[in-house]
Length: 401
Ligand SMILES: C[S@@+](CC[C@H](N)C(=O)[O-])C[C@H]1O[C@@H](n2cnc3c(N)ncnc32)[C@H](O)[C@@H]1O
Image 1 (spheres, rainbow, N blue to C red):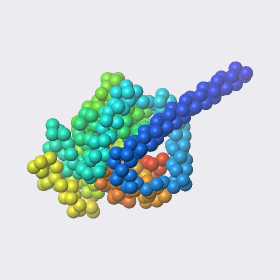
Image 2 (cartoon, rainbow, N blue to C red):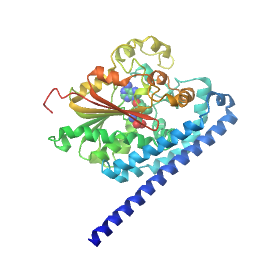
Image 3 (cartoon, protein in one colour):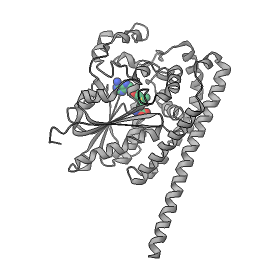
Image 4 (cartoon, helix red, strand yellow):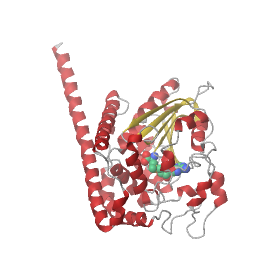
């Protein structure tokens, strides 16, 4: 009896220590990011003073709300690990080698970003980059980043830039999709775990796939993205354990190269806000008809304004098509104005600071409606920190799985 209570005390102490270590880890990442942002802003005010006026200050109340949301996100992340949704070690994941190697490059790139921002230049690519074959909306310097998504250096800097942007919480936000996916897959209880197939749409450098692998060690994982450079980076990250390597394919999310009813689960993280309303619908015909411009191979973005918004949401349609009946789709993206209007100032700041041409439309876009229109049901939404989640099911109309 006494020994049982000692074991319980030991378990409790161990958990308390791990939770404390996790909190310290998260706080350190947040402090580091805040320090980076503050120093960057001061330097920007000195060297590019005209960019200073663009952002609106955040109220004290909003900052408190952010702090509370940060805390809730950390708590939810910890609880999922504690429940065994993913191993506790996942909470401490950070590719340190990349950090030390590329953090100085992040600083070297910053003046180029400011200069593009100042000139409102968002279609600039190094001459050696092949621009043919991409949808026009994609050929942009999102966030004014150098070479958009199309160079190795962009892929090397991306994760660091995103971690800083989200105050060290990008991975915690990505991990919020894991519990709904794992829970959603329980309907396929009769399928052997190694025959479960999960796709990450717009997998980027592979961070979400890394966490999916930790959560579903035996499942077959797949990732698609338009960027060869980001896929190559994902391959590097995920081949640390070669027998667990997901299948990575360069493909447009609007035309997934898979048969109908193929995946038991699908995830997509931070993609939808970067798609024009029409590209959340079908873009392949438009991309063909525009072709390439003489200088950069990039058609003028103004062409996109006339695209018919009322056509079906092709990305969601595609996700629906390749999901098995009963399967689950989980989307993670930015918060939206429609359910968190109190964050309007920070959303406006995001638009003013980063080149995000489709974000304003995205924040008022009703994705629940779009998911239901595509055929998904039981659509649920959640908000954590500055991210929003949609969890949807494809109806079980076909019994074969
Ligand atoms: C903001 S990043 C998100 C990457 C990753 N999911 C993450 O969690 O960091 C957007 C990604 O979407 C990809 N992308 C954008 N449009 C796409 C499309 N139509 N089809 C496939 N990938 C696309 C980009 O190449 C980029 O890797």
